[in-house]
Image 1 (tube, rainbow, N blue to C red):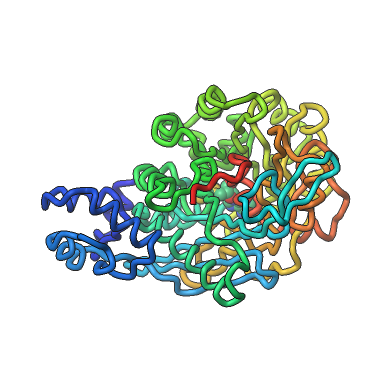
Image 2: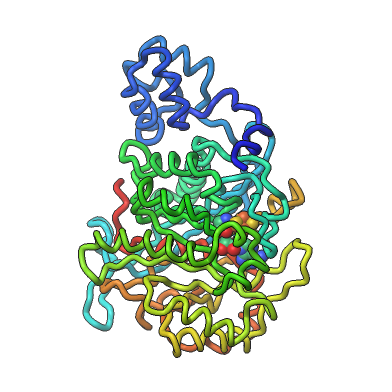
Length: 483
Ligand code: SAH
Ligand code: SF4
């Protein structure tokens, strides 16, 4: 699959300077010390270099090579769409060959954290338990695409109907982050410095594509994201969402052991899953669950305390009369109980697939969740409310351009930051924390779903970003971005 996608795509020319393997190989072929590559990245990303002349002591041979064969950016933002409440920004990014992908920035507003940098301390507040917390509006998550289209063909996913058109290079994945940071910087300039998030702090691989089907590029991009000389993000703030590519889930333990893992499960049994996720035929649910458990087990074997246990986020797109019955809820409960797993139930977001799928009714959803929470004590994540502005679905940008819709669907004005869902003891959020974040969408923990039908209708239409957003973050609750 990887080869065929690449074969369909011409090699990039110029090549992305942020594509590590390509740049290092070109340097090696010309006997240029690799330290100059690291210096170039550092100067462009951290020291405001605008061209190669701004990078000091660059050998002439390196400069000639760069000018002849590499570009600082190979993609461009062709459209930016902002939710009216400012919480979400969608960037339609055009690649060098004209193909388009979408990246979505999700901002978190008035939230309360357990810790925050010194300069923010004046904003400290105390919660009911007397714990000091700090208010911040400086967080943003980016939902990135890893492929143009996707070959996995999940029956409810519009991206799956596209087939796989291209794999992104690692440079193209990292360029999405550069575009997003630039958008945040533009915002700050417009509103006056100090207003809004400084930079992207969390990444979720939940845009178009199956990240583990473009493994090498995704791993290389993650390496760039966490490198202190480049983006300096904490690996715990990067989440990789997969439909369950077992061999790659296994190799992730070696190649990116600290990232958050999200598993798109959608069905608790092999039979049911195979009906809606074609790749279930290649990777049996038992093997997928084993791989997910092994991944989080190696993380928790290194966890400093039992209170800081990591969890796999289980994504479950719930479709009426397909995987929404009480019986299925019991099966799911039995599968997930007593595991380091957090369930994110996402009502099916109606989209352009050739099936007459519908989201569950509020009643069905309530029953489903109650079974999981009360009978199996499964931690679940649910959105209850959302912002008012939901008109511009993330996927619509790509629909306009290519008649296709990616899955990173964050049309909602309100988004969830998993950081808000975890308290200092490592458990899912307390009522207090939830209350602080409810306007922004989510309820978590084991409480009943609020009976709020009209709003429910809203959030059905929003779909995934919730997952995306949520996802990102349960993996790292403490403010630890290294910049
Ligand atoms: N390919 C990866 C990552 C991108 S998909 C994966 O499948 O995990 C991101 C999430 O959006 C997945 O959980 C996916 O199942 C979900 N999704 C796709 N189409 C959807 C739809 N129509 N409604 C709700 N969620 C959807
Ligand atoms: Fe691909 Fe994920 Fe969509 Fe399935 S849900 S088709 S794996 S993008």
